[in-house]
Image (cartoon, rainbow, N blue to C red; front, side, top):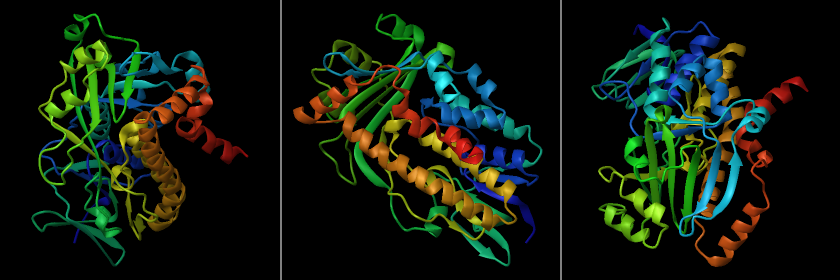
Length: 399
């Protein structure tokens, strides 16, 4: 069977495109990206990108293009959903950028995806195939092949599974299933002028209104032209099959919220709902010349806003491992050895942070708020374990 390319990347989302771009920048290998959708694109709404993600975008040469569509907020703010009291603040201005080496930005997911896709299109070593629902991966005689929904096979020297939460490539390593958190999200963007007319918009901040088993996130995207809102709550009527987390339950769960929150809910689109899933960390996601990346390897809940950032970190570390190693397996093992502990920590930390944000009982809430109050807006050390990953990595190299 003739090889399609040196490397096949299964999945054309943010992680898959970043991996293709990173590999072709760090090595002379060719990459084919197989995407199940009829065309390349990204669904969803806003996305937050912390300095660790910006470092990767900088290395990939797309940072400046991404910044054109982004907003640089001045603060991250946690507010009480009932009283609007500010519980915690993180200053994101000059001192933040000096500490972490990169800014914190917010933008529309489709703008990030488009920037990566256009950079891949301009790269002569990357090709794309759409309508490819890859079912399985097979290894034989030093090559790897994937089989699509029609039984067609494509061969390469190595395969990277970047096919998301419901990854078929992951089944090569684990038979685990996604775990439902019993939380659901409603999200979307609206023209800024519609929100501005209410006089309630904080244009300079990323705001998270938090309460028992619920929250609302708000921030501007696309150069401030759109306002992004995400409502998240835990259903009290969970059923593995059936209708749960409905708009009617959302309205009931937010009864008694601050008037600013109540008005914000009027602008939330309820046409689509996103049940929230993750998986438990797995110890191994590499076999021979096959490995996983992003949500296929380590899907996480979104409470730390690190899902895309971890996929971006993966892409750069994987490409650097390929650059340094003498074989794919050597590179993939080195990549996994570095990334598995890191991503497992972020996965479990995201779960814990969700529990803290959504505290139910009075004692836990009081303890949480007391701890929040002990930090200043420039207590950047609390975020070092997330945002300073590449800084600390470089320190180890220099030591």
